[in-house]
Image (cartoon, rainbow, N blue to C red):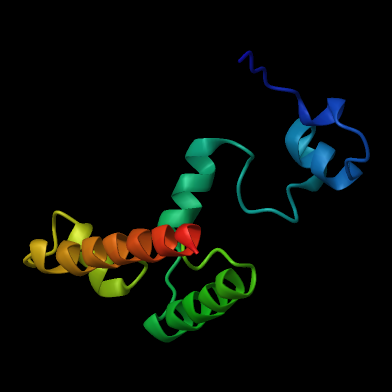
Length: 118
């Protein structure tokens, strides 16, 4: 398969604000705190400080949307404990989190196989 990147300006119906942000940042710099460059975006992302309550609320909303859209069966484990267990700086027995996930995947596969047989 051949892939190529298309510049946003080559795509139809792009808002002028987006085009100015990408091509003429000086015109819109009063509205954005970072330039459209990876280093700038990463710096701003690292500075964000959201409370655990806010992150949990967003997670709950996204989980509900995933379930409504039918992607709940395919999603990766998203619990905070699981994410912390994946972090090398967080001292947790990682295998305790991997086993239940593997069991759920295996159970899901058996259930999907039974559906195909019906």
